[in-house]
Image (cartoon, rainbow, N blue to C red; front, side):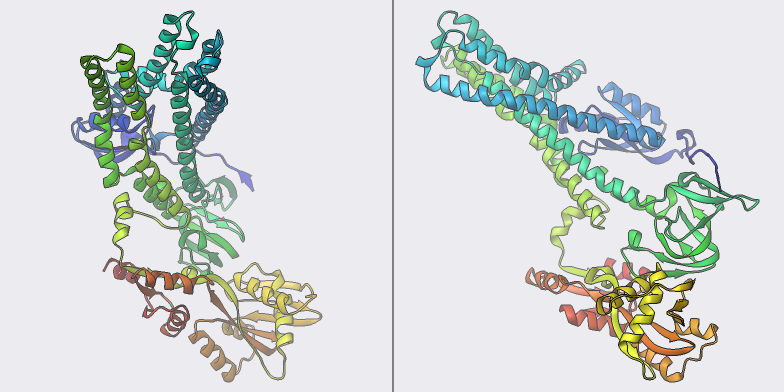
Length: 630
């Protein structure tokens, strides 16, 4: 098999339709006021509708007019920030962006640790000398200055840099408040030091205030950066489900190893046991058993054959197939799932939009209140130090920017955590509306049940024993990777010891397996599998199999030396926590409904076991969607 290098399929911005939705990565935002400013500026462009999310550092823009992508980028730059078209950035650059995010968090961590190490002795010393002025010694204020200087210069530099950038573009941000507060406290302390030369017992210092504000805000920025990284982990984990490479078949039938991202529609590729299917497609030859759990949450295997559809990101558990790609790149189901989560994170909830509107006027309002405070104290006859102290207090109290940070960060972390648990929100409004839920609709497989096969029934036939059935079936299935085989082996291992390994093992994908166990020819599979092998299965045995299947069990017949010796039924097991979860829902006043594609008998049995009163069975996926939507 040769290696074939091909570029990934990309769509250039020039090829986009005039009415299109695009995402931009925005750099340089430090608070909610920044995102609000960029959003206002973009929405002033002709035919542009934009939502800028500070937490995700992205702008979601809809272009419907003469404005181009470059115009959007230029508009963001004119506001004092930078933007890049997300879709046009190669994977290497995205990896570099992740490293840059890591570096930013590490830089904040270093500054935070230095600030914290200096703040503790500075705070203790300031409090001690303030409470006991008589113990002050000549030069004590210089000790305080030396402790504060690294923090108010180096550690606080990110705040100054952002404030200077905002001032350059004639605007204010939360960093403006932070910087003015830190600089004012430091400047006033220096003024007090030099104006009270020789009277060290009368010096009033605020270095601890400046350092304290810096330390606490650095802690906030660091935890914010960590929260963003953790939220991004959920998307990265979801993206990691996809295959990295594909075994492409060229026109001559020669196999080449290529990046999965380079596959094009109508191209054919091979999938072997244990491999991840590279993209959505249709089976053109072969048969297999597919593990769909990564994409659908259904742990029960799905059998596929010629003309059946397969989904990229699912794993071939058993068999061998050739697939023709039908959807690639951004059109695949995995890409659509990723886009759903990203779109939700790039939207704004009602609470977040309100917070952003307040943030946009918060900074100038605080500055105005601080100046009014200064003027009021002076007008009432207070001295300048007292008036400055009051004005400075207003700035310092307003420094923490939780107003612009709390809502978007909480929403982002919530949606990322939900995605990791298999819960997807179309937008944040849906997340907010979840408090109005009055009915819980539960799927059966993988939700109420474990989504994992386990032995449910073992029926010995014609004088055989349970031990003999499990011994032969368990020994044979040790050579299988199929989920049914694994369940049989697990059951045999639990009841028996020392299972021998099979020889001459072979598998017919989706039907059964055969081999030799201690000199006996053993076969385990469906009734159809044994019929094709020429083994006679009586009507009585067939009837028993049908009865078990009617109860929702997956049934196989065990044959030794051409004669049936037993029937094995496997079924999904109910989650230990399911009954308590349903009881908790009912305690909250919620109505519970079991909605499943399984037959009515199985659905009723599962519902009764966990305490669900309403059951809708035999529902197809499209019907499930329609029923949930009402």
